[in-house]
Structure formats: structure tokens, C-alpha cells
Image 1 (cartoon, rainbow, N blue to C red):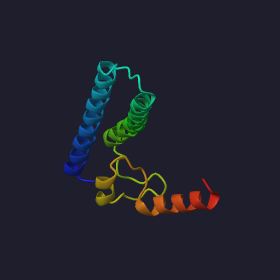
Image 2 (cartoon, helix red, strand yellow; image 1 turned 120 degrees about the vertical axis):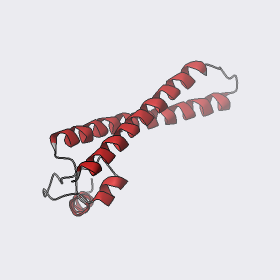
Image 3 (cartoon, rainbow, N blue to C red; image 1 turned 180 degrees about the vertical axis):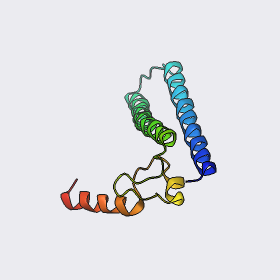
Image 4 (spheres, one colour; image 1 turned 90 degrees about the vertical axis):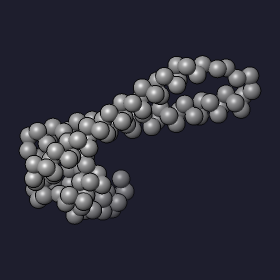
Length: 120
């Protein structure tokens, strides 16, 4: 992969990390500021449902942060864009769609088919 491509992905991944950080901070701020108590059980349930949903989103972001850091590490060690299963280069279009991926489209398709057959 060319140096300009690696720099593009480094910047993209760094921006993704920054965005997740901002969203997490906004969620904390919103949850700490919004300490209203509702007498109506339906209103309380709605608020709790919204908070639970937001926390699930932040948990997904936490897992994504780990993958982003691993991708940045692969950029540093020279293995970014190389499929972990077959060792071939991952297409730039695939990396643009999912920059944290570690598998080329063929290997990922094969993995998903095997999981489907196992019932995972």
C-alpha cells in the first residue's frame, strides 16, 4: 500500500477515535445534567429506555475503539491492509467501507458462510 493511502487511513481512523470520544463525553454530560425525576411511570420508563439505548451505543463504540487502535497499530507495524487469513492485500474500497477490517472480502464471505452453517 502506498504511503499516501496509509496516511489517509491513519487520519480517517484518528478522526473516528476523536468522534467517538466526543460522543462519549456528550453522553456523560447529558446523563449527568439530565437528572429529572418523573412522577409518571411511562415517562420514567421512556427515559430509562433512552438511557439504556444510549449506553448500548457507547458500549459498541468502546469495542470499536479497540478495533481502531488495533488498526492504527497495524499501520505502524506495516501489516495494515493485509488479510489475516490469506495474506493478500485487502481492496482499498473495502478498507474505505470498513477501515478496521482484517479480512479481505473473499475470506470474510467464507468466514460468514462457515458461521452460518455452524449456526453461530
